[in-house]
Every structure is written in structure tokens, then in C-alpha cells.
Length: 378
Image: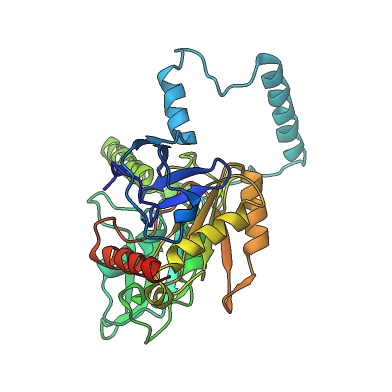
């Protein structure tokens, strides 16, 4: 269900109270937020079974992305609103020319070669019966995988040359370099099938892939691309960009190196819970979500908090209104201990999507029913 219901039920996992605005917020699986306008439950009713209030309705909270789309609608042709004013632009161009001339002041210096960003990870410790599609499915949770012209993910499995048996090693290629660090942080030293409840066998070692260019290859030996090659590349890049837009609502600008941009506003928190803890305590999902929100709001405005209750690594995401506050959150939370576990905090661009219970998922409904029963006996 992508839209909010026609009622307010404060006991539902998608609903939380924004302490800044004192408004009830409903949030869908994509991170879109809706604000309740209408009658609200009295404070003294918080210990009772929540009622469904129908006197009112949900209104969508306008996000930065929606605001950007609105600005695009009213954009004036021929006017680039992102271009600085003429005097500022002249100063910037003059400074850039000065820096470029300084870089090449040394005599006889060869022009620097453009460094291609590394978008690949090398993985060892995979189960010997793992297949390409299973590996691609796991690693695609942390970024869009690069595809070939036929739409197949760029995942290379390594086999023993003598027996042709799978060696448990693979090369996984992402579309964007930012996904490399995220995959290393969240998948290194874990089990490939942890999401399926398998916590035995080899642990994966995930690291940045290293490539060594052959000295026999030079610019003259490189194949000249035909018009058909260029057309296929453009078609593939367009398809990958569409997938990136679906996976991540952040900036589409190419970055020369891995790591978050200066405008990154989302922090991933790892090891915040275990799936067993969520099953044992139906109220933990709401309590933990509210506790993290209150802790992070001491740093600045929080737009939303998501607990991904299908992730065995105990993942939560916190999105701030101000990038500076997001960086402060990463510094504060990384390395802290929570319930005997050391938290890993990672600052990322956009809105990364992991797995959590769907609204109509049977397990989510069981957890909701258990929470209602817990409220009645509390």
C-alpha cells in the first residue's frame, strides 16, 4: 500500500509523533511522509488500545525532491537557476584558470590521466553452491548493479581452471562508486544467506576490487567504438540511470570518488537490533524508532526514521534536514555501544532502501496484533 489509510491508528508501525510539530506522521515504505489533520487521541489514552480515528485526513509532507520537481515545472526556458550571477561566475572562472595554470607550471610535465572511479567489489567466502542471481540479489540491496547490453548484472564468478568448480569468489560491479563503500560496510564479515536465517558456513570477505593495467595495452591498441557501440552504451546508461532513480532519490551527478557528497543527509545505523528481539518484544519496533528519533533530534531536525525489520544486520536509517547535522550524527553514533553491540554509522546520499515488512505482510500483521494485545495487558 503506497498511500495512507483513511483513518489514524497510532498503534500502527508506520505512525509516529513528530515532537517538533506535535503532529502524527504516517510513513510508507519509500520514506514518503503524510501529516494527520483532524481529531487526535487524548494523551491519557496512550496506555489503552489505540482507536481508529476517521474524523480527519492525511496530507503529504512536501519533500525536498518534490520541491525540486515543482521548481522544474515553473522553470523559465533559457534561465539556469543553478548558475551563479555574472560577477560571481567570472570570479569562479578566473580562480579555476589560475589553479589549472599552477598545476601545469612544471616544465615537461605530462598531462594527468583521468582516473576512472572504482565501482567494483571483490568477494570471497561465498557458499560453493551459490549462483550468480543469488549473489546479485544480495548485493543489489546496497546499490544498483551495472548491467550488460542484455540487462544481465555484471557479476563474475571465479572457477577452478582444472575442475571448473566454483571457488567461492566473485567480482560484483556497481553502477555508482558510492555503493562500493556501503556494500563493504554492511556485507563484510556476514553470511550471504543471513536474511534467510542461515548463520553458518563461511563468512564473506568484501573488499574494494584492485585492477592492474597490463603494460602491453596502450592508447593505440584500444578498439575504436562504432556508432552501434556508442548507441548500445547510451541505451544501457539510460536504463541504469532509470534504475538508479528508482533505487535512490538522491543526486544523479557523477562523482569522481567514492563516499558521500557534502549534501548527504541520510545516516545508516547498523546493529541496532536483532530479528529475535523484534519477535520477542512487539513494542520494540515503535520504542526503538522513537528513542532513535529523540536522540537524533538533539542534533537537529529529523525528517524521518525507518527501522528495516527484515534486515538481520539490525539496520535503521535517519534522515536529517541539514547535512551538517547528519555528519554530526555519524560522528556521535559510530562506535557507540547499544544493548551490548557496537553501532556502525554510515553517511550516505539519497534514500537507500533495504527490506522491511509490507503493510499487508502476514508477519507484520502478526506483530501488529501482538502489539495490540500487549497494550491491553499493559
